[in-house]
Length: 302
Image 1 (cartoon, rainbow, N blue to C red):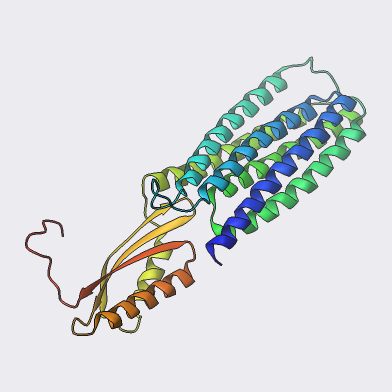
Image 2 (cartoon, rainbow, N blue to C red):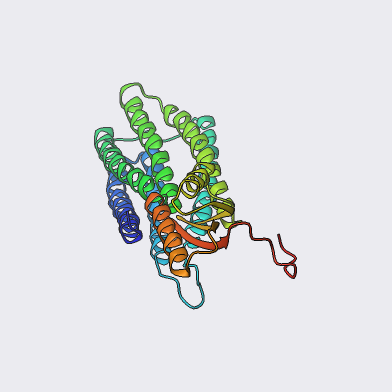
């Protein structure tokens, strides 16, 4: 898949996320007016925050898609890591707020009971269906592009599914049993799930900003391609670093020093194409050395 196709997929996920968040915010606002449910109010606040986060994520995706320029010779893909790190911190804070609010609600015996619970349940079921469809598309995009902004946004919406289910249980329990504690218990579980996922995504974004190498599986895959490539008699100094959904690859290959420059260039170019075909997110730079070359004595570096 080409990078332009990846960009279109990432932007489609961002636009769909904004659209879903807007629709759900309006639907839950109506449901709150109809029911007066605190559980619905909590999901409304979450959807409103989702809308802001999704807008920020879409902005980051669009900025990261900008081509390299004079000021950013390697492109703008690190914007994805910055946005993902910000989203993970936001999700951690949200998880803490949800957990505290849930505990306080469990300790409060004066919570107002909701009305017209059936309308609220219908809106929340609609919310779950729409959110699930969005998550399915986001997961497809993440598998195709590896975009961290879409991955973080997907985690946030997966976390939304649990409070929505809890709100439905709360409304049902209110209507059928006259109790309101169930949604608080579910909210605490959702907060723990969100915190764990946010830590995982935040760590990956931090590692990328610190120029961490690519996954070992990818490194070994590139090494296998170079090792078996026709005309390549050896390789060394295989280095990688991740920036957003792009992986920068530097590789030194060892070639027959008696062949022409054209022949050596053809081997290097073909190897680069082979690596990019296997890993479309890779930006590959290949240096060619004659077999058995020794470091220049004036160069102190290895």
